[in-house]
Length: 65
Image (cartoon, rainbow, N blue to C red; front, side):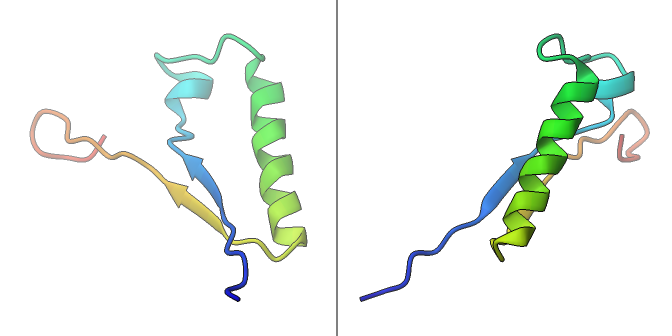
């Protein structure tokens, strides 16, 4: 039998959600961040890998935003 493989994907948690043009409405930003951190801490505590992905777009002029 193959062992179960697990990972916690954390996708696109960006500054814009907290202090930019795409604010999180519900739950509030502080609670959202606390929940994300708690999930990541729990995964680390159970030796489950955390995979963080972020979309990086290019602003005018070719620099990453």
